[in-house]
Length: 396
Ligand SMILES: [Zn+2]
Image 1 (cartoon, protein in one colour):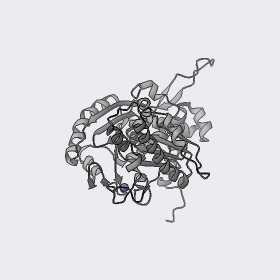
Image 2 (image 1 turned 90 degrees about the vertical axis):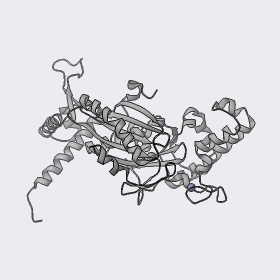
Image 3 (image 1 turned 135 degrees about the vertical axis):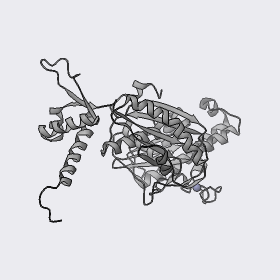
Image 4 (image 1 turned 180 degrees about the vertical axis):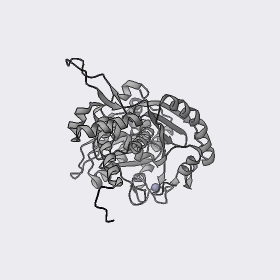
């Protein structure tokens, strides 16, 4: 109001904006000298130097002298993210398994664990999570300072509304539970909560697909769709977007827990496929299964139904990339070709369908990355060029 000079607010805004631009470039390129940073961002050298110094002080970046050894003279000093200064946690809260991933400030996974039998009682679950995390957080805070824990993001297999509240989970039967608030009382760190399919899609984009739009379909006990639109998770009006498992495929089909009949996940989730195959007394060896006529019929029908739903998604969104993530599909890459064989429509347009590379860790990794994105206050995280998964051997 009537302030024609540059206020402290404006100066801070520009400072934060400059820092964001620099951090995004450092993450994308891995390591850059101050002069390269100036050239790539268009910021002048004095601004870059002042920002880098303040980011070193805050523990965001570090400087190394591991520049090009073949260049004669002084080795360039490179600026890179400081992996040892902080970390974040992503947790995939499924009913039978709770999957936990810690990543450092560079985005590298530093700890993974699967806890069996997450409690259905929400208060018990909160105290279990607290009991499990507290000693680990202490351990990693002693090796990652000065920043330490930047936050925790929980992936929930259900609907999270726009007030960050669990609206409903079919498996645990949680309704209107504020898990975020319950954990905030127990753990002193920013807590985020999101749908598992959203976080899985985010994980795929950050770690493997640096494209602005991406669709990830998780096919485990239900079917979830995570939509990344312009590098951002698309949530819809109240956070319910992507409940694609409840798209009606057969109007006179069996009743679903959601209140409709013939929902897609009653035909195309892996849980249903496994149930049908186990009724034949068959295992998971697909070569053996496909040689059995009864099993082959079940698998053919499953792929056909998977194709119906995909056809609809493709026609609504015209996606560039679709990532399919399920235990059976990840083990049987040939399924992709067979599924694509069901997409006959002349108006089906997409670039490619591929299998998830993060598999069952997609949600937890996406959650941990989501925390870092917020902590670093950047628009995009791009870890595509890092070889984390060969480096760590955690996901082999
Ligand atoms: Zn339904």
